[in-house]
Length: 276
Image (cartoon, rainbow, N blue to C red; front, side, top):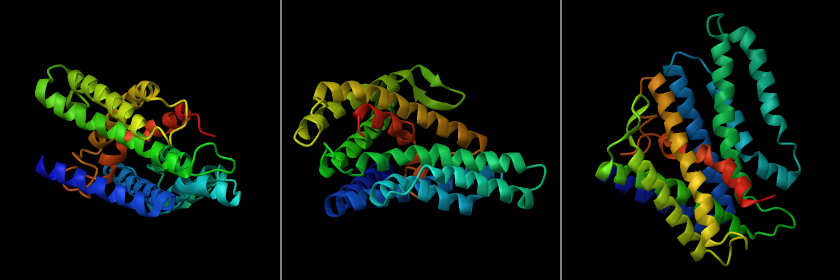
């Protein structure tokens, strides 16, 4: 637990410093790095499951897909073509580089990684990227992204602590034996409170409709999706017979173990924020 607390504090310090000093550029670099490292660990789990994804080229396409909204806003590139192009490239490679026993699994695991990790985390880039004629300031966009991270991570923390304190009823014992319904409810409530407080503190930068009450209501489905994301990662790790996705973050596991709660939450938050 001490390592987990230290790692959490260190991560928040790094994220906060990067956003404070480098602003939007710092956020874009962090998101791209997290996406690529998450995808790398995803592909490692796929290999441990007996599949053979095209991991190196997959990481390249994953990084490009993640930052595509920024490139589209800055240079007018047609970013939506990247996933289609990647599919074509992997389909062509498949015919000459994999055996008949694993061709389907190779293509499926490679493309699923791109969609599940890169495409979904791409919405964090959509949230922080300023647009021409924007009604939200660049600082406001950064704070919206940070709000999302706070809500997701407070749910993680609340579910862990409350689950340890009063958790009795297992949520999904076959997937994640330590998760309880009491911890999940506590995590959602803590997320709602954190979202409301954050919205009040950032009220001068947030979009006008995002009042503390609305922020609390939006935080609830985001927190629930964070829990679902964590369960999905547990399914993937169980298939690979791994406890953690890696050992990058002491006391917490791999980057995937840290970013998992953001994956399903990012696109939903983007829609609920009402951003262009």
